[in-house]
Image (cartoon, rainbow, N blue to C red; front, side, top):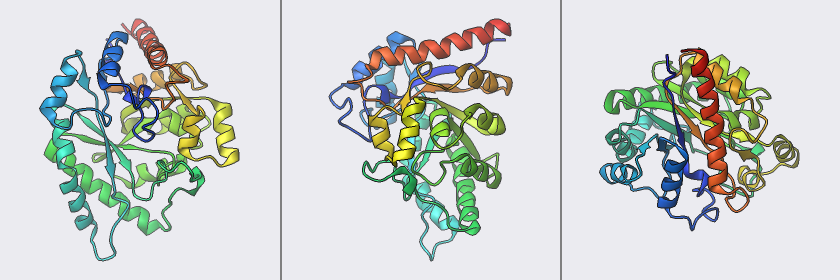
Length: 312
């Protein structure tokens, strides 16, 4: 039986939202045309995409593409002292409506939830080790409750799953953080966006083992490879996340040290059906967009084809 996965890409290969100087001059249409030519079925969103659902769908359709998902900057880790968890979530519910409606109009089934409260991921001069952390068990539990409430709302209102993106420089970064998040949240309300590159950088020396541990919660996958020597230097020298990006911590599948054959076989064995999204923050002046996007696609497509050949 053919494995029901589709291969998409994030526009970071062409242009970077956090560092607009990287590919900032590249038109959106260039990325869409090249992505379609390579063979990608869809794109995740970036800041150059239309902001309204119908316009977004029409723009992607010009190139025979669909919307994979889109990053949502959440702030559920912040709560004013007088607020209940439910009140804190209500503010997020109101703030997210336009974004979720846009995704819903485009038939998107998962949203990339990135926790941006206290995050340092966009601060180029702040070492990644200075990320925020929950100071107590109660703060962890309150955060989990807010995520549960928000995730239930997204499913009930938009039919969209909350796919939590563990991320360098944020509250949930390390394997231990991911373990804690999965233990405290409702499996029917909060799902995991598994990012291979962030898993490795966050401390998972073998990202496949961490994936296998939580694969039943995975609703979305970012396929990012790593240059191990650069990550080691980033850790040793206390680089910021963006300083690491500029110096090549990340690359596309097939160009780093992560065993993507094992990653995809783990997902296949667990019955994962969804998107495999190539995402690699790089400087396109150093890592040419088309060349690297094509390498990422061919790596994943080759493995998917082999798996399908082995499981007719």
